[in-house]
View 1: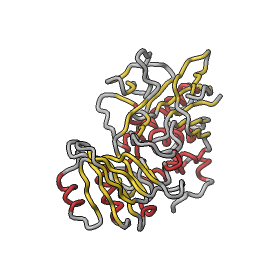
View 2: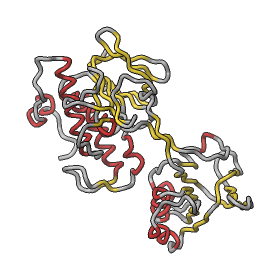
View 3: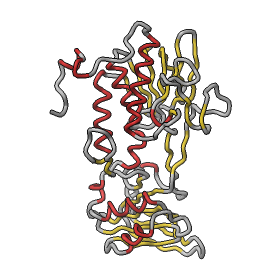
View 4: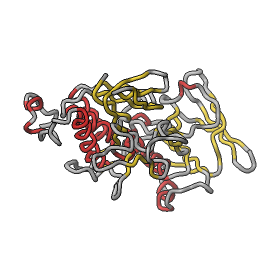
Length: 337
Protein backbone atom coordinates (compact mmCIF):
# COMPACT_ATOMS: atom_id res chain seq x y z
CA UNK A 1 0.00 0.00 0.00
CA UNK A 2 1.29 3.44 -0.93
CA UNK A 3 0.63 6.73 0.81
CA UNK A 4 -1.30 8.28 -2.09
CA UNK A 5 -2.72 7.24 -5.42
CA UNK A 6 -2.99 10.04 -7.98
CA UNK A 7 -5.60 9.50 -10.66
CA UNK A 8 -4.73 11.31 -13.90
CA UNK A 9 -1.44 12.20 -15.57
CA UNK A 10 -2.13 15.72 -16.77
CA UNK A 11 -0.50 18.87 -15.34
CA UNK A 12 -2.31 18.58 -11.98
CA UNK A 13 -1.56 14.88 -11.57
CA UNK A 14 2.07 15.16 -12.64
CA UNK A 15 2.79 18.11 -10.36
CA UNK A 16 0.99 16.34 -7.50
CA UNK A 17 3.33 13.38 -8.03
CA UNK A 18 6.32 15.69 -7.70
CA UNK A 19 5.05 17.58 -4.68
CA UNK A 20 3.88 14.48 -2.82
CA UNK A 21 7.38 13.10 -3.37
CA UNK A 22 8.80 16.36 -2.06
CA UNK A 23 6.78 15.75 1.10
CA UNK A 24 8.22 12.25 1.47
CA UNK A 25 5.09 10.38 0.38
CA UNK A 26 5.08 7.18 -1.64
CA UNK A 27 3.12 7.63 -4.85
CA UNK A 28 1.32 5.65 -7.53
CA UNK A 29 0.02 7.60 -10.51
CA UNK A 30 -2.62 5.92 -12.70
CA UNK A 31 -3.40 7.33 -16.17
CA UNK A 32 -6.13 5.99 -18.44
CA UNK A 33 -4.32 6.89 -21.63
CA UNK A 34 -1.09 5.28 -22.80
CA UNK A 35 0.70 8.61 -22.50
CA UNK A 36 1.05 11.45 -20.01
CA UNK A 37 0.30 15.17 -20.34
CA UNK A 38 -3.49 15.28 -20.28
CA UNK A 39 -5.19 17.84 -22.48
CA UNK A 40 -1.84 19.45 -23.36
CA UNK A 41 -1.61 16.65 -25.92
CA UNK A 42 -4.54 18.19 -27.79
CA UNK A 43 -2.37 21.15 -28.83
CA UNK A 44 1.18 19.81 -28.55
CA UNK A 45 2.50 22.01 -31.34
CA UNK A 46 0.77 25.17 -30.08
CA UNK A 47 2.78 27.66 -28.03
CA UNK A 48 1.75 28.17 -24.40
CA UNK A 49 2.57 31.55 -22.91
CA UNK A 50 0.65 31.79 -19.63
CA UNK A 51 2.66 29.56 -17.28
CA UNK A 52 4.71 31.55 -14.80
CA UNK A 53 8.47 31.40 -15.26
CA UNK A 54 8.27 29.88 -18.74
CA UNK A 55 8.69 31.76 -21.98
CA UNK A 56 6.26 30.80 -24.74
CA UNK A 57 6.98 27.27 -25.96
CA UNK A 58 5.17 24.33 -27.56
CA UNK A 59 2.89 22.40 -25.21
CA UNK A 60 4.87 19.23 -25.97
CA UNK A 61 7.92 20.82 -24.29
CA UNK A 62 5.88 21.55 -21.17
CA UNK A 63 4.67 17.94 -21.14
CA UNK A 64 8.28 16.71 -21.25
CA UNK A 65 9.26 19.04 -18.39
CA UNK A 66 6.28 18.00 -16.26
CA UNK A 67 7.09 14.32 -16.75
CA UNK A 68 10.77 14.82 -15.88
CA UNK A 69 9.78 16.77 -12.78
CA UNK A 70 7.16 14.20 -11.74
CA UNK A 71 9.76 11.43 -11.90
CA UNK A 72 12.09 13.24 -9.47
CA UNK A 73 11.10 11.08 -6.47
CA UNK A 74 10.46 7.92 -8.50
CA UNK A 75 6.71 7.44 -8.28
CA UNK A 76 5.20 4.31 -9.81
CA UNK A 77 3.46 5.38 -13.03
CA UNK A 78 0.79 3.10 -14.48
CA UNK A 79 -0.47 3.86 -17.99
CA UNK A 80 -3.42 2.57 -20.00
CA UNK A 81 -5.67 1.81 -17.03
CA UNK A 82 -8.86 3.78 -16.28
CA UNK A 83 -9.93 4.07 -12.66
CA UNK A 84 -13.58 3.02 -12.43
CA UNK A 85 -14.17 2.99 -8.68
CA UNK A 86 -12.80 4.09 -5.31
CA UNK A 87 -13.95 2.36 -2.14
CA UNK A 88 -12.97 2.71 1.50
CA UNK A 89 -11.84 -0.58 3.01
CA UNK A 90 -10.96 -0.33 6.70
CA UNK A 91 -8.21 2.34 6.89
CA UNK A 92 -7.33 2.26 3.19
CA UNK A 93 -8.78 3.23 -0.15
CA UNK A 94 -9.19 0.52 -2.77
CA UNK A 95 -8.79 1.96 -6.27
CA UNK A 96 -10.11 -0.35 -8.99
CA UNK A 97 -9.19 -0.07 -12.66
CA UNK A 98 -10.99 -1.24 -15.79
CA UNK A 99 -8.97 -4.48 -15.90
CA UNK A 100 -10.25 -5.40 -12.40
CA UNK A 101 -6.87 -4.69 -10.82
CA UNK A 102 -6.96 -3.19 -7.33
CA UNK A 103 -4.52 -0.70 -5.80
CA UNK A 104 -4.45 0.45 -2.19
CA UNK A 105 -3.49 3.76 -0.60
CA UNK A 106 -4.00 5.90 2.48
CA UNK A 107 -5.30 8.84 0.42
CA UNK A 108 -6.31 9.69 -3.16
CA UNK A 109 -5.84 12.77 -5.35
CA UNK A 110 -8.16 13.06 -8.36
CA UNK A 111 -6.52 14.90 -11.25
CA UNK A 112 -8.64 13.61 -14.12
CA UNK A 113 -9.62 16.97 -15.58
CA UNK A 114 -13.03 16.60 -17.20
CA UNK A 115 -12.29 12.99 -18.08
CA UNK A 116 -10.56 11.04 -20.82
CA UNK A 117 -10.94 12.60 -24.26
CA UNK A 118 -11.95 9.89 -26.72
CA UNK A 119 -11.63 11.03 -30.36
CA UNK A 120 -14.58 10.47 -32.68
CA UNK A 121 -13.27 8.06 -35.28
CA UNK A 122 -14.04 7.58 -38.94
CA UNK A 123 -17.06 5.51 -39.92
CA UNK A 124 -15.10 3.69 -42.62
CA UNK A 125 -13.34 0.40 -41.97
CA UNK A 126 -9.57 0.16 -41.98
CA UNK A 127 -6.86 -1.96 -40.30
CA UNK A 128 -6.25 -0.88 -36.70
CA UNK A 129 -2.53 -0.86 -37.50
CA UNK A 130 -3.10 2.21 -39.67
CA UNK A 131 -3.73 4.32 -36.56
CA UNK A 132 -0.60 6.20 -35.46
CA UNK A 133 1.13 5.22 -38.70
CA UNK A 134 -1.11 6.48 -41.52
CA UNK A 135 -4.32 7.69 -39.80
CA UNK A 136 -3.96 10.12 -36.91
CA UNK A 137 -6.53 11.45 -34.45
CA UNK A 138 -3.93 13.62 -32.78
CA UNK A 139 -1.17 15.74 -34.26
CA UNK A 140 2.21 13.96 -34.12
CA UNK A 141 5.50 15.68 -34.91
CA UNK A 142 4.78 17.74 -38.03
CA UNK A 143 8.07 16.56 -39.55
CA UNK A 144 6.39 13.19 -40.13
CA UNK A 145 4.43 14.78 -43.00
CA UNK A 146 7.40 16.21 -44.86
CA UNK A 147 6.99 15.81 -48.63
CA UNK A 148 3.81 13.75 -48.13
CA UNK A 149 0.32 14.14 -49.58
CA UNK A 150 -1.84 14.65 -46.50
CA UNK A 151 -5.60 14.69 -46.06
CA UNK A 152 -7.07 16.61 -43.11
CA UNK A 153 -10.71 15.89 -42.27
CA UNK A 154 -12.60 18.12 -39.85
CA UNK A 155 -14.97 21.06 -39.52
CA UNK A 156 -13.44 22.83 -36.53
CA UNK A 157 -10.68 25.27 -35.70
CA UNK A 158 -8.29 22.49 -34.71
CA UNK A 159 -8.57 20.85 -38.14
CA UNK A 160 -7.89 24.20 -39.80
CA UNK A 161 -4.82 24.74 -37.61
CA UNK A 162 -3.55 21.24 -38.42
CA UNK A 163 -3.91 21.89 -42.15
CA UNK A 164 -2.00 25.16 -41.82
CA UNK A 165 0.81 23.53 -39.83
CA UNK A 166 1.13 20.52 -42.11
CA UNK A 167 1.18 22.68 -45.25
CA UNK A 168 4.54 24.08 -44.13
CA UNK A 169 6.22 20.73 -44.82
CA UNK A 170 3.81 18.61 -46.89
CA UNK A 171 3.84 18.23 -50.66
CA UNK A 172 0.07 18.76 -50.83
CA UNK A 173 -2.83 19.02 -48.33
CA UNK A 174 -6.47 18.12 -48.94
CA UNK A 175 -8.76 19.82 -46.42
CA UNK A 176 -12.12 18.01 -46.18
CA UNK A 177 -14.93 19.69 -44.27
CA UNK A 178 -18.69 20.03 -43.94
CA UNK A 179 -19.73 23.57 -44.63
CA UNK A 180 -22.74 23.37 -42.30
CA UNK A 181 -20.50 22.32 -39.38
CA UNK A 182 -17.54 24.59 -40.10
CA UNK A 183 -16.62 26.39 -36.85
CA UNK A 184 -13.35 28.10 -37.73
CA UNK A 185 -13.23 31.79 -38.47
CA UNK A 186 -13.54 33.07 -42.05
CA UNK A 187 -9.97 34.36 -41.76
CA UNK A 188 -8.75 30.81 -41.09
CA UNK A 189 -10.61 29.46 -44.13
CA UNK A 190 -9.28 32.27 -46.28
CA UNK A 191 -5.75 31.41 -45.23
CA UNK A 192 -6.30 27.84 -46.43
CA UNK A 193 -8.03 28.87 -49.64
CA UNK A 194 -5.11 31.14 -50.55
CA UNK A 195 -2.47 28.56 -49.66
CA UNK A 196 -1.06 27.05 -52.87
CA UNK A 197 -0.46 23.72 -51.16
CA UNK A 198 -3.99 23.34 -49.77
CA UNK A 199 -7.03 22.13 -51.70
CA UNK A 200 -10.30 22.70 -49.82
CA UNK A 201 -13.10 20.21 -50.51
CA UNK A 202 -16.46 20.85 -48.88
CA UNK A 203 -19.43 18.61 -48.04
CA UNK A 204 -17.65 15.32 -48.59
CA UNK A 205 -16.58 12.60 -46.18
CA UNK A 206 -14.06 9.77 -46.11
CA UNK A 207 -15.77 6.46 -46.87
CA UNK A 208 -13.09 3.99 -48.00
CA UNK A 209 -9.35 3.35 -48.19
CA UNK A 210 -7.31 1.33 -50.66
CA UNK A 211 -3.84 -0.15 -50.26
CA UNK A 212 -1.49 -1.62 -52.82
CA UNK A 213 0.62 -3.55 -50.33
CA UNK A 214 -1.77 -4.12 -47.37
CA UNK A 215 0.65 -2.11 -45.25
CA UNK A 216 0.01 1.51 -46.19
CA UNK A 217 -2.66 3.80 -47.61
CA UNK A 218 -2.70 4.36 -51.35
CA UNK A 219 -5.92 6.31 -51.87
CA UNK A 220 -9.04 7.57 -50.12
CA UNK A 221 -12.62 7.54 -51.37
CA UNK A 222 -14.58 10.73 -50.75
CA UNK A 223 -18.37 10.63 -50.97
CA UNK A 224 -20.54 13.73 -51.38
CA UNK A 225 -22.95 14.17 -48.49
CA UNK A 226 -25.90 15.14 -50.73
CA UNK A 227 -25.70 13.51 -54.16
CA UNK A 228 -23.61 10.52 -52.96
CA UNK A 229 -21.18 10.79 -55.86
CA UNK A 230 -17.64 9.71 -55.07
CA UNK A 231 -14.05 10.29 -56.10
CA UNK A 232 -10.70 8.74 -55.24
CA UNK A 233 -7.63 10.74 -54.22
CA UNK A 234 -4.13 9.37 -53.72
CA UNK A 235 -2.78 10.27 -50.26
CA UNK A 236 -0.03 9.15 -47.91
CA UNK A 237 -1.52 10.01 -44.53
CA UNK A 238 -4.80 11.22 -43.01
CA UNK A 239 -5.40 13.53 -40.03
CA UNK A 240 -8.88 13.41 -38.47
CA UNK A 241 -10.41 16.02 -36.15
CA UNK A 242 -14.08 15.12 -35.74
CA UNK A 243 -14.38 16.14 -32.10
CA UNK A 244 -14.03 14.20 -28.86
CA UNK A 245 -16.24 12.59 -26.26
CA UNK A 246 -15.48 12.98 -22.56
CA UNK A 247 -15.57 9.98 -20.27
CA UNK A 248 -14.91 9.97 -16.52
CA UNK A 249 -15.84 6.56 -15.04
CA UNK A 250 -15.64 7.99 -11.52
CA UNK A 251 -18.72 10.12 -12.12
CA UNK A 252 -21.79 7.91 -11.95
CA UNK A 253 -25.53 8.51 -11.79
CA UNK A 254 -25.46 7.85 -8.05
CA UNK A 255 -22.35 9.04 -6.26
CA UNK A 256 -21.20 10.08 -2.81
CA UNK A 257 -19.20 12.93 -4.31
CA UNK A 258 -20.62 16.44 -4.16
CA UNK A 259 -20.38 17.55 -7.79
CA UNK A 260 -20.70 20.82 -9.67
CA UNK A 261 -22.63 20.50 -12.95
CA UNK A 262 -22.25 16.71 -12.70
CA UNK A 263 -18.67 17.17 -13.88
CA UNK A 264 -16.40 18.77 -11.26
CA UNK A 265 -15.53 17.58 -7.75
CA UNK A 266 -16.34 20.25 -5.17
CA UNK A 267 -13.44 20.74 -2.72
CA UNK A 268 -12.93 22.66 0.52
CA UNK A 269 -10.07 24.98 1.48
CA UNK A 270 -7.80 21.96 2.00
CA UNK A 271 -8.49 20.56 -1.46
CA UNK A 272 -10.59 17.74 -0.01
CA UNK A 273 -13.74 16.46 -1.71
CA UNK A 274 -16.94 15.55 0.11
CA UNK A 275 -15.35 12.16 0.86
CA UNK A 276 -12.72 12.39 3.58
CA UNK A 277 -9.29 11.38 2.37
CA UNK A 278 -10.04 11.97 -1.30
CA UNK A 279 -8.72 15.21 -2.78
CA UNK A 280 -8.98 16.86 -6.19
CA UNK A 281 -6.76 19.22 -8.18
CA UNK A 282 -6.72 20.95 -11.56
CA UNK A 283 -9.71 20.98 -13.89
CA UNK A 284 -11.31 18.11 -11.95
CA UNK A 285 -11.78 20.41 -8.94
CA UNK A 286 -14.35 23.10 -8.28
CA UNK A 287 -14.41 25.93 -5.76
CA UNK A 288 -15.55 29.56 -5.78
CA UNK A 289 -13.29 31.63 -8.00
CA UNK A 290 -11.84 28.59 -9.77
CA UNK A 291 -9.92 29.42 -12.96
CA UNK A 292 -9.30 26.55 -15.35
CA UNK A 293 -5.69 27.33 -16.22
CA UNK A 294 -2.55 25.22 -16.25
CA UNK A 295 -0.88 27.54 -13.77
CA UNK A 296 -3.72 27.18 -11.27
CA UNK A 297 -3.53 23.39 -11.41
CA UNK A 298 -0.08 23.63 -9.79
CA UNK A 299 -1.53 25.59 -6.86
CA UNK A 300 -4.30 22.99 -6.49
CA UNK A 301 -1.71 20.20 -6.56
CA UNK A 302 0.37 21.78 -3.78
CA UNK A 303 -2.68 22.28 -1.60
CA UNK A 304 -3.88 18.71 -2.09
CA UNK A 305 -0.40 17.25 -1.52
CA UNK A 306 0.13 19.18 1.70
CA UNK A 307 -3.31 18.12 2.94
CA UNK A 308 -2.57 14.48 2.16
CA UNK A 309 0.66 14.73 4.16
CA UNK A 310 -1.21 16.19 7.16
CA UNK A 311 -3.94 13.57 6.85
CA UNK A 312 -1.41 10.75 6.98
CA UNK A 313 0.88 12.40 9.54
CA UNK A 314 -0.98 14.94 11.72
CA UNK A 315 2.35 16.06 13.24
CA UNK A 316 3.75 17.06 9.86
CA UNK A 317 4.25 20.71 8.99
CA UNK A 318 1.47 22.41 7.02
CA UNK A 319 3.70 22.73 4.00
CA UNK A 320 6.95 21.32 2.70
CA UNK A 321 10.32 23.00 2.71
CA UNK A 322 11.06 25.21 -0.27
CA UNK A 323 12.94 23.15 -2.83
CA UNK A 324 16.17 25.15 -2.50
CA UNK A 325 16.39 23.95 1.14
CA UNK A 326 15.31 20.37 0.50
CA UNK A 327 18.12 18.05 1.61
CA UNK A 328 17.55 15.43 -1.10
CA UNK A 329 17.34 18.00 -3.89
CA UNK A 330 20.52 19.74 -2.70
CA UNK A 331 22.41 16.59 -3.70
CA UNK A 332 21.04 16.62 -7.24
CA UNK A 333 22.03 18.51 -10.33
CA UNK A 334 19.20 20.40 -11.96
CA UNK A 335 18.35 19.23 -15.53
CA UNK A 336 18.63 22.84 -16.70
CA UNK A 337 21.26 25.25 -15.41
